[in-house]
Length: 426
Image 1 (tube, rainbow, N blue to C red):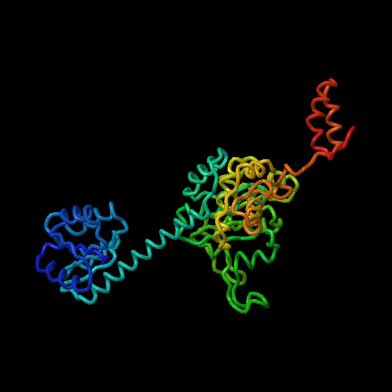
Image 2 (cartoon, rainbow, N blue to C red; image 1 turned 45 degrees about the vertical axis):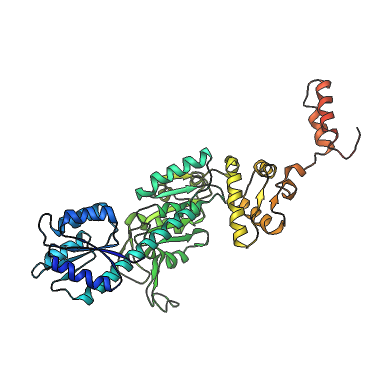
């Protein structure tokens, strides 16, 4: 299928010559003699590119361009201008025209411009596709009430550009959510830079975050760009901010307050234009009381708090998560697709999951690769996840009997548990 080009010009001779040349180049051609006709043709035929003359009867090329960009912002438009209207053509590029050509037209330049515009559109479409795949990859799986509320909160806060503090237990997916927020934000086309706060001892932080000039210290053989500068225009994610030492917290708080910094060994002030997302598995308010966290930094970061529920509080999501992970790992290891029975899923829903989603993911990966059967059943679920394998001991049941206030009830409970023992008699 060849690209379709719409030629819009009120001079039939221009349309005829361009149509013939571009047809020979392998393009499909549509034509329009004025702006009204062009807009109708675009709605009806959806061309891949428009060649648009600036000076036309009725609505001129500039007004036509404005209307095109309202409805079809991704459609590339190349302007054709006569002598003396270069300033108008330059203004057209500000409105959204991809390029412009002066009359008399150089066919080589026109063809080159068309190919450049089509290639640029293809790259934009690929970028949008990759962006949508990234959003899908970093989406939060599950439909429980807790996760539905979390998704709604992310959808509302992600485009705001406010700083966010994500809290939740280890393994709940804090980094995943930081990526989702970035990809849904106005900064999505700029970098997302991760900072591991656990490893950021004071001194290393300055080098890592601020960067340094050549010769700033003995080991500084070349200039180094810090992570704050790398994240320019984008997002910087402080992973486990609660593990950062107090000196580093104090330095960071000052930088965030001033919104500027300079590299080590440098004098030039670099302005910060970034969004901050931080995460913690600790109770930072409690850490403030203990003297382990600066209140000043906490309040700077905690503009929008997002709390991720642990897996044990969203067990209704476990069936969906298991199926997603099974599909992921069978595809990754090129093994036949696997299913899981309702009984096995029920077992997994009874487990408290101290390691949260990370622990569930690791278990599913293990089952995908070590169980040869295509359907996972209760017998395939290992301890401690298989609570059905836990056999009560006589002492524990005997002690429970004392909970009842009459002997008849105790005997009833005893009979129910009798067959669970290894034929022991009391």
